[in-house]
Image: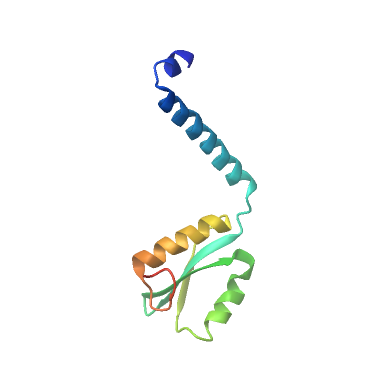
Length: 107
């Protein structure tokens, strides 16, 4: 390893060290952060109408809330993940799909 690093420029060594530390931090996050949030999509007549996130144990309540102001007949959700990861995924999906009922993130 020392020979490998000796052949690198100081900038490259810095990138390697920073990258290694970043990877370790991400692993620690993955094992310590709660996996409590699901991403879900609402559909009406097989057409996507909404992307959202909810705490896993509140998903049913969240769907009941949506039934007051959204028309949908199906919900698809994925495995729980850390809330920060779910929020990032939600924004990406909204920007990509621009569902009817998502007013934010889709511009």
